[in-house]
Image: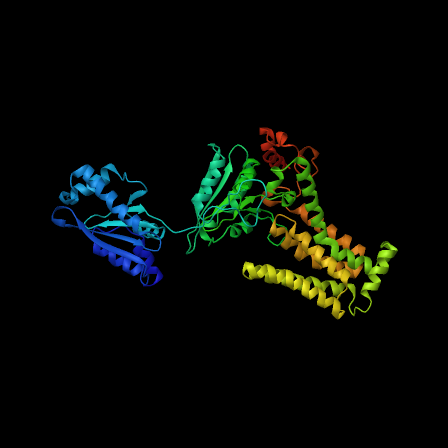
Length: 506
């Protein structure tokens, strides 16, 4: 059957003949060996023919038994024993009184039958009745709620999002018991028909931001959506930027904090990753644990992350620029140690740094792709072995191995993994500029990065806010967070929303 005829068969009402309906089902689901069509009879002298249609891979046996019992209970309640029921009494009961059983719906369209079967419902068809009953019996095993591996904390909640959309929505609503929380459901296009939802706090979100977001995702019904990252490119200001303009998390407490600040939360069925947008630059250094520790400790740790960001971005380039163009800026004792360590190295500092960075990134990627027990051992042991071998072979100096190792360690200190990927991309152009123009090339690269950051406006908002444009009154949670008694005030909870509204006016 070709696509045109299949579309014509689906876009119609159900037939009163159960055989006609089943023939269409056989054609549509041809080759689907996990589809169950179970025929049965009931009523006076078992004269009424019926059947149940469902995917056994989407339901469980106890669910089908429950549905039969629920159907019989309804018939007994209205019409005495099920064996005395007539077709007229049965159809009149459901058409006039509706479906009172939990998680059940009544419809008369063939396309609705197909959709509900694919969503894990059990469909009941009755001969000589052009309607169908659908019972929600979805029972696929999913991962239980547990602590996210990528966002583990020493102190704080241990709950993490899972691959079930309804569970994730429940985790959010459990923490925000307010009618102000709005959840809007959408369905993606293509073959997957993935369910997704975006949520916001109506009193906190900026209305121009919300309208811009809705306009950008208006094409979702036409797209295949398999993961939250598919929506990232729809809401980003510049998809080619190495800096993420949204924030990903698997922690419901982080998602709720973002909603309280006026952000929009996006969740997709089938993935545990939630997306908060828009994402600002300074939020890349924030962690949920910052708000569960003492103010002084959390402030020092956040400053350490910012320092690690510059180390991961600039350390190899600074080494190349100083040793190649500006050795007079290095203390004499340290310079002599570096010259002594580089004696006999056949490559200039740029080639040496480029090779070591390349192989370090290769080891890191290999450690990620391998099974977890093996991957960590390969990445650590491989780095040690290759570093020692490179020094012994005279290919790299000990100082270069230290530089590359510190750069890699610093990139691991940044909470957002997507930021570390962006730094890996920017590190090599900065090394080229440093090898070409020295310190001047490094300054040129930094100015270009700064200009790029200031030009980004995800969903129309300033990416560098509140640093650029400068707003000192909103620095209570930038480099060092203010005490929680100030952050927990209602006026503080809406600060971001007010900031975004001011940005919109600009």
